[in-house]
Image (cartoon, rainbow, N blue to C red; front, side, top):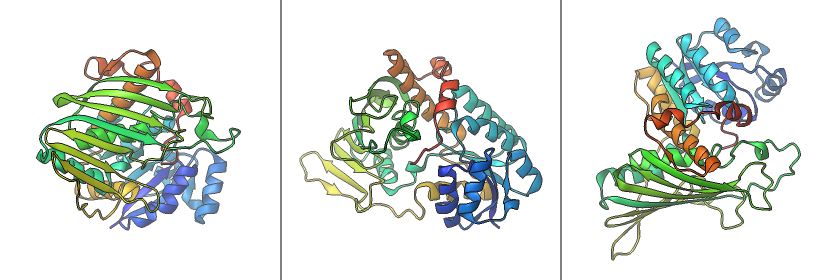
Length: 365
């Protein structure tokens, strides 16, 4: 029997989910769509071609009108926690787009409610559902190359073509760190299997950038086990474009692992291992039945059906969120940020309202 889902948030990205992701997961069935904006509902209905009886202006209306097991939240960021709390309070499971919440405090509220209701609360960190990071995670777990020392990550894209007028992406609050780097921050935690301790970060806007906020930046992140990550990213780079995961080079005691994932059409996903004194060797990638958002939704449905734990639970994702907010705070203040209690509770202080107003959920990635 399919997991019955109400989808809340029918802007452009929400419709993309409804058209290109949900239909590919056979054990998920959407029973209603929700958006408080009438225009968004009308556009969604025109695109999806379903009966007007499937569309509602509030989650409460939809929950009262249809039977469902879960709520998929693809709204803008300010809606993530209110919608999550409403769904959880009604006893429904929740899959929510990244970033999870506009503050760590809000995220904790949702986590507590999910645990009180004994419901799945999962964050769509879709970059985890790819062969390359899964393969690299196993290499690191097995210590095939000994201890990890330094990790170098480069992300370069040129998203600077569109006219400034009417282009929402240019107005996003911290477009690199919040809209894009959160994927890379989450991959760091997944692949390395340890948690971040401290971050230094600097951001800037090249003269040709059309973004209102800093489109480029770099960070030094200290992780557990004496691992240091050197991270660089840009939305307006004129250099060779990287894959969406970024290009990674992990220096270990006995060699180097290089990998990339989520490339453009025709760019293969790859993992290369180069042991000390030997030629590099490309390793065979594991088979992944469902990738990206499709893999995330399938994992969520399986967890709902069988009562399983999920890797990207709300509780786990708080550490990814903390790293993102830590990067923002370090960039804004010029001061290194520590990512362990009691500092953790203060990382997002003062940022919640600004983030909620200016950041859209998973804008286009």
